[in-house]
Image (cartoon, rainbow, N blue to C red; front, side, top):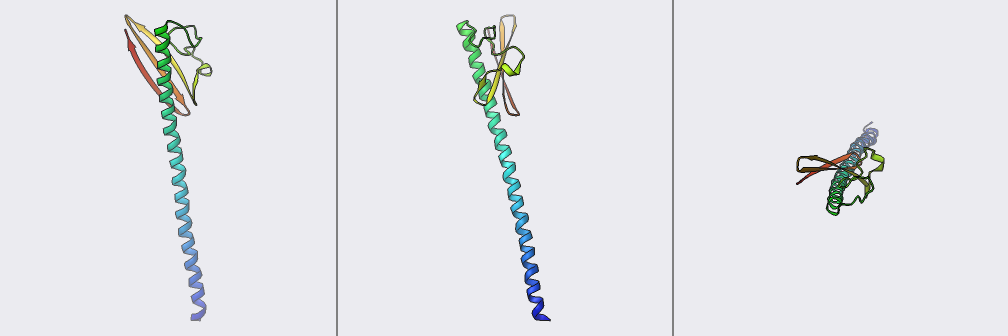
Length: 126
């Protein structure tokens, strides 16, 4: 009887070891998937920021030149028509810049979008 219980206990040990290793592998795969999602969010955040910055530069350039470079019929704004579908693309991101004047101050607000990320910049000129 003792000789038949050794193979059975070895088999049980191997099964338990395989279960433990399976749990470890599944945990590692889940962690890697979460890291990928986090990296994508970070990249989208940077894309949205740089799109907002690029849009701000475009709007300041329009205001400096006194010319409507993007064809939205307003100098100093970029795609200020309320339609996200017409916003210019900068890489994989989109941007829109609006302008508001109060007295002698003009506030430019640039909004960049990439994936789920949104970034906004504002500049005040006199």
